[in-house]
Image (cartoon, rainbow, N blue to C red; front, side, top):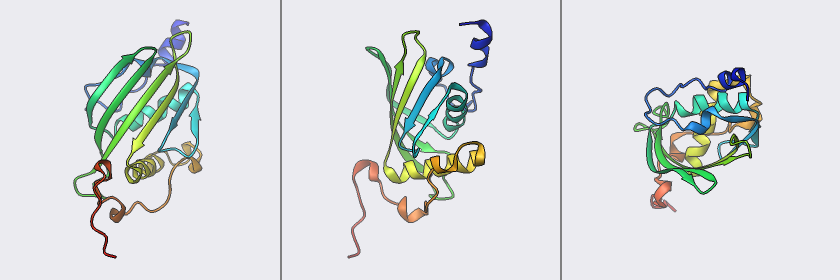
Length: 166
């Protein structure tokens, strides 16, 4: 790698409120692939993936169960409240994520798989990304349906549903 490539790979840290900054963010391969429950499809390329992750991190307030290398993979398991979701739910919306980071032979981040849950929070998160990025990414990549509060008033992450009115 050349020094100029190294400089272009440094992401803008839009999440200055977070103490955690994983090293793999600044080591994205040219053809890195980002897949996740918040997308209808995937993102490819270091610039696009870096832009997405840099902003997406700014919506989080992490509470980790684990993060670090496990064999050849880097894993993260955390819960968070999505910043900016208070308009949909007064206390914000809780979201969980399990991330698997894969590396190529050069040690660069080559693929990221993100499993956000519960589904209602993942759809809300997707819509917040869509609002922020507008047309910078293909709009069909994001959820654009209803994210009203009646979908978010359940604690789906623990399997607790309110009693049915039926």
